[in-house]
Image (cartoon, rainbow, N blue to C red; front, side):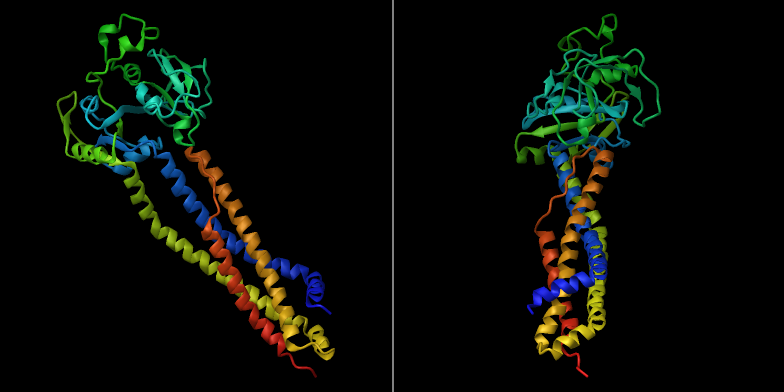
Length: 412
């Protein structure tokens, strides 16, 4: 009888036990696969979200807070950057474009960001998908996932925390444009002129215009390039012309101090988004190694369980194996049969582990995307292929033990 025909018969007879062991191996391997996929997904997605933010200028303090608050729109305590810092960048050598950002309000769950038109299209790199850029103080441009569309009106709420704060009852905005989807937290943001943000908080930068209707006045006449009358901004986003310009500008601003409107000096810092991310990844490295060790140990335990199953199965099927020997089957035939049974479990567990690992990572990505606004999708790579091959290789070696024991079974 061909060994594969006998294998098929044995798999049917022991289907419940073998499926159970394959599931144990699959779940163990899925933990390792999902951990690796999720870590890579977090790294790649967070790095992609920061691609457009080459250089950030903020008040001296935590570089991580500056990154999280500006790039990922998290609620971080950021010191005010005096407007003089922004003015020094306008038309400066090596600056492609620069834009201030001011946080502190929201529209529903969306962050309301005060800025200038340069940031709305990221210097022309991301044209609007619908409508136009704001041209009047009470006009807004909405992110693709903000829930707003062209023509909608809204009242902003004071405060970043959802469910807290109060509405700015006399500051109704009209959406005139929608930004293209970028897979970043900025898809949930709503952008308005930065001067309008300050005027809502009782710091109108152009008090000489307070007799006019700001909602209909052209922005060119209402907002000037000189922002020196503004109380400040949360940060400044800078797009350098070249890499050399980026390093030069960072060095300049890391040593620069400017005067705030109340006369105090504010020390500044220039931060590369990429460098801060590398530091965050390094901080996560220890936890990732510990998790990798735990998952590797889990897979090893599952393989050991598979090995034990193979040995027990050999004992349970000993009468059948002895009958084969009596009928003239050589030891290699009997050993091959049991090796194939154990390897079937290993192959099924490995395939199921890769599939379940990807599914678990996808679920993690969905939860994280809903929380952070960063588009996340796990991608299988050579790392998973290597892990699968290592598991199959280990399983093949482990399967030799019950196969050898079955081949040595003595006939009475």
